[in-house]
Image 1 (cartoon, each protein chain N blue to C red):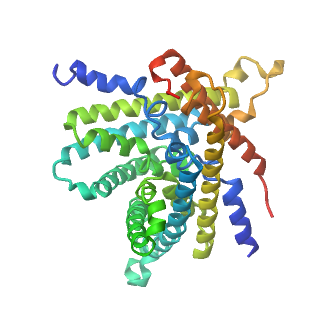
Image 2: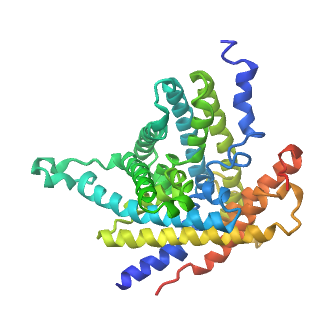
Image 3: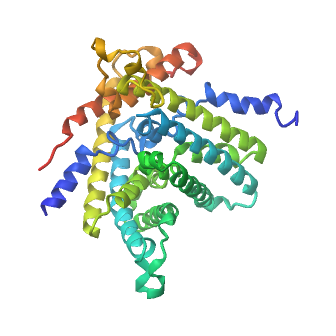
Length: 205
Length: 212
């Protein structure tokens, strides 16, 4: 249990997807103009993250790594398909995003209306694929650990985008030098936020 | 031959370097631009990989553009890009293993680099293969030079070296009390340097300034 709490805290704050690894930056900068849309995209990322990362974990463990295919036949024990992991991860993510979109549309039209436009965007959000690749790199021992990591990373990303959107809403009232307006000042703002998040470095429970 | 390098095609190559730069103007592919720029060598390898992948994915998708059904084009594009990235990743692992370790997940993340999807959607789906190939190279270089610029500042100020060559040590700066700036190798520095590059570019080219 302690292990899970540690993993959760470290993926939300210490190894925050945005501030430590710069993942999902494109949509992070593009969709953070108002808090409302930022909350929508943040929720969609958490949602897709906690589904795709454990699924990718299971598929990798039982299909791709060396010796994974022994459950089909012992002859396949030496087969190592791990070079295929990129193509499998991205296919799984694209398929699940599509599936989630259809399920949400069928069962909760109100949620679909608020998440609607963001779901297709997420298939190419690098935070999702990045999450899967970090999951592969960290070599978790159980699927639950990968789920905790997914939840933590998703929440970390959502916190980051909501915080930036709130700051940008306030920034409308400040006098920014013309060439820095818009994109430039946003970069510097994210840099300062990342500096604040550096304070969590080495943090453990 | 002269037609292949007409002035229109040359524009495709040079525009992304400044006026339509993928990072500072189109805001595409920022994730990897920030993460791999601590040292110049990985940044250089990354830039080269992205140039190769954008050029060839543009070429392949543009060749196939008439036979791809519109509804499933995203999946087709992702599969083409992912296959190219697997090739690049395997080549890097075979020939420059240490750099491939430093780049860690960011080689895989070329797949979701928005430069690729952006150029495939905006250019390759509507243009001929040769033009698309040039557009891919142009955008790859536009991305690459920002990467090199950011990594030069970060490595020079953060580690006192250029391309791994210890400049500051050789000129004896440490013995007179010079200290490396540790913040430069931390993540926030990358964001601020890109912000400053945008600032410089937009004060030189007024047309890029955003309206209020």
